[in-house]
Image (cartoon, rainbow, N blue to C red; front, side, top):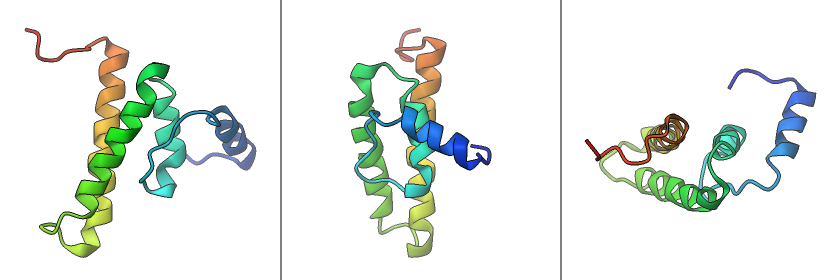
Length: 99
């Protein structure tokens, strides 16, 4: 997300008030996550937020990744997952396995 002014940030936070956020995520990503979850149908938001938490948690505690890189890798994997879901919903690709 680009830099937002204070008033734009407050307005965005107010619009995301009732969007469920993942239990475990980086606090710097909260606005970005909320704005992407807002693009999804309401009935799927909580499930996607839970899956985001699961991916973030697994990468954060993965012993094969060096300690200093874990948080960055966890953010990258979870954010890529969310972006992939949002893109597929916006493009109407509900099932990529159908050929």
